[in-house]
Amino acid sequence: MTSGLARAPLAAAALALALSLAGCGDGEPATPTAQDSPTPSVSETAAPTEAPPSSSGIGGGPAATDTATATPTPSDAPAPSETSVPTPSPSQSPSESAPVNGPPRTYVEALASFDEAAGSQEFSRFASPTGNLYCVLDSPYLPPSCELGTGAIPDPASCPADGPSQNVGRIEFTDAGPQPVCNSDTIREPGPPTLGYGGVATWPGTSVTCLMEKYGVTCIDPQTGQGYVLAKGRYQIF
Image 1: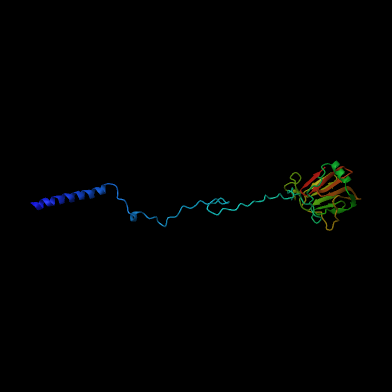
Image 2: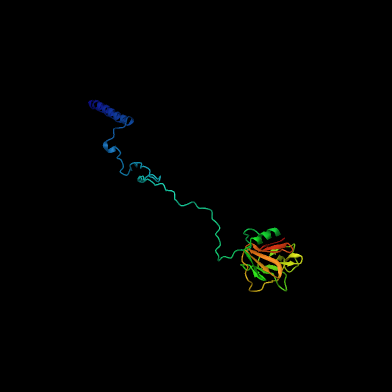
């Protein structure tokens, strides 16, 4: 009986100890020991320090040293001017189709051109400096005529479609005055003398006289007051 009563206080003490240990699990967590504290990882990278922007505007590089840039001094060279047309050298052959002062349009203008001519020479036949124009002032077979080598003028009004040519390549002084000829032949003969630009050709056997210019040839007959201009690509009768 006595042993049973002695075990009762021991059981009560054991129960109290158990209750005390259970209460520790539901309250504040136990203070962690030094071993439980997390240790910082050595692999963590410190936040990079922001670098000052470089002169190129790209961050992260070394700061560029400010360098004073010299302002370019304007050149003393003159501003480019308009390109002028070069003057042909003496070795270049001038084109007879390029007017200089313009061909005459009337007999009166033609007379004025002859008055300004450099001088006259007696030629029964002659050629222009380029050789494209060939003229005959005296021939037993031809009236006074001038002919183009190249640059004959298309003229449906003067050259019928069924004719030998549809282009005017020669002009002849007939009894009716200057007449365009739609020729397929030629009056040329080799070795003619050259009538220079500004020169006048005459011949005692005819009243027709011709003036050679860069635009072409002008021929007139003072007895009839008629004449014509013949050039590469154009002709005019007045």
